[in-house]
Structures are given as C-alpha cells and as structure tokens.
Image (cartoon, rainbow, N blue to C red; front, side):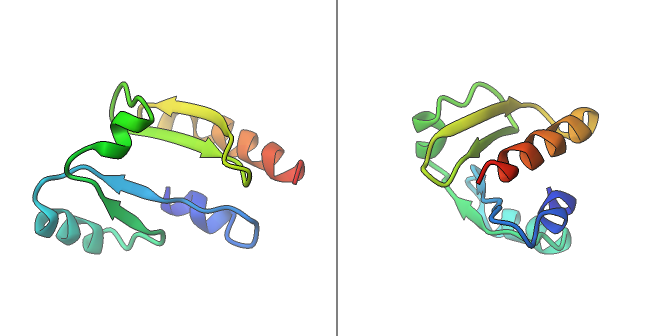
Amino acid sequence: MIAMKEKFKNQPFEIIAINLDKDKALAEKFIASQNINFPVAFDPEASVAELYGVEGMPSSYLIDQQGKLRIRYTGFWNKSKNEKEKTISQLLKKL
C-alpha cells in the first residue's frame, strides 16, 4: 500500500486504512515502524467493517469520487499487485 500511494501520489487517489485493533498504542507503534504514508483510522468496535460487510482480513475497497464502490478485494495484495495497479490506472483515466 505504501508503494501504491507513492505511485499514484500525483493523481486523485487516496488510501485510508482502518485499523480494528483494540490496543491503539500497539497499533500506533507498528504504524510508526512502517513509515506509512497514508491516514490510518481506528475502529476497535469494527463498525466500518460491519458497514462494508468485510468477509476477511485484510480487505480493500476501491471507491470512486462519487462514493460508488468499484472493486472489492479480500486478501493480501502481493500476488496480484500488478493487476490491482492496472485496475486503479484504468479507473483514474476515466476521471
């Protein structure tokens, strides 16, 4: 996600992470150690996860500027990173 944010930094693209950990201090320590370049919101009650019907962790959602859900991914990005970058590029071209 850090690399993705860097790649699309000059485009209308944002990453917002939502951390579900109950121990905010521990989560903040991890976030600081990773040099994360996007905002991280905390939701220890998992309200947002429930709202979006999260089926597994991690989950990613691509939401356009009108708030429309375009794509939903469950799982880690490593194996399909190129596919996801291509999809994001295509969506950004449509703006």
